[in-house]
View 1 (spheres, rainbow, N blue to C red):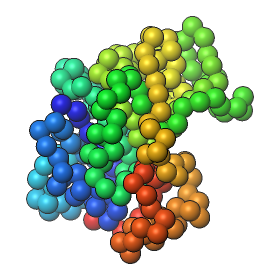
View 2: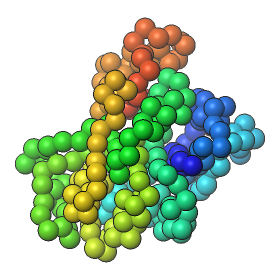
View 3: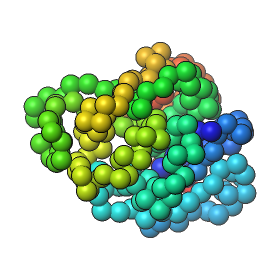
View 4: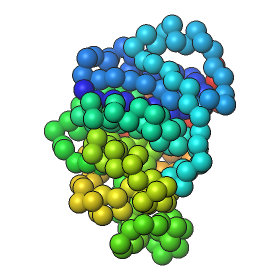
Length: 236
């Protein structure tokens, strides 16, 4: 079984649509949870609609790994550590990552690959990138990083992360994850290139066209690929 973890502090219309597609396509090969920022509130009737998805309110915690949403699964798995080993893989997906079909389809395309960490992008960073110098605990530092908006962890890597973050190692997730892999001899790879659309850390004009497709139910620009960031201002 694989665990799909989605991170959010709201349920906007686009994210809710993502959850509905997951809810309708999930089977016994997957478990889906939403980690919701405990400082926020949501319409509880959503739970009646998402029968196959569990919404769990979790506190943000202080950690060098991340000061916002990604700290929620650090907190969650510290309290549910033994759960990690029961999954073949654990997926972490931010609420503004969009895939036009169910994410199950995207996930299934990567089932044959057994890397410890899979990400949309992994590679060299410039010397001005701030996160390398903030790493602590590693025998050697490299100017490499990952784009962490959607990731797949092996249980081995996730267990090491939970065991060591802010203890043996410290640093921001985009930098610390590839360093843990290198330090511990674990594998890292990008998702299949044909599944990656425009995935960045900032909005741009192309994302506006993708959002128009989503809003109008068209596919003039949208392909069966992941896109980020796709944001909406309508929340429930």
